[in-house]
Length: 82
Image (cartoon, rainbow, N blue to C red; front, top):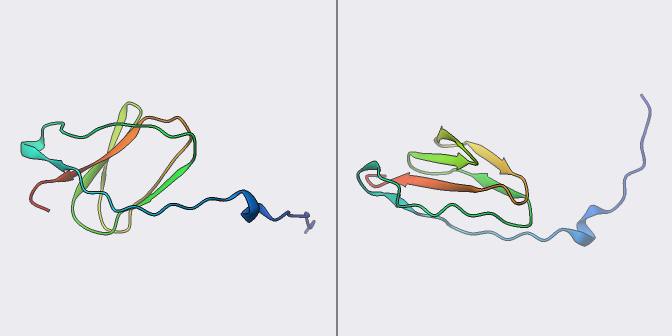
């Protein structure tokens, strides 16, 4: 196995942690799609939801992980009863 040299990527790494809750009332779209100039790692830890990336929507539940690229339109939609 060939070894490759790796540099220290942490000097340019910025980590931001947020808690998101955007309910979907009667399953209508009350969420706000957005994009960033950075990669986003979303880890779903509670409730039933959907995650929208560009023009696709996926169901997410406990343990789901979504990675969005920079400038990719995305949002999470939580169900009101969760």
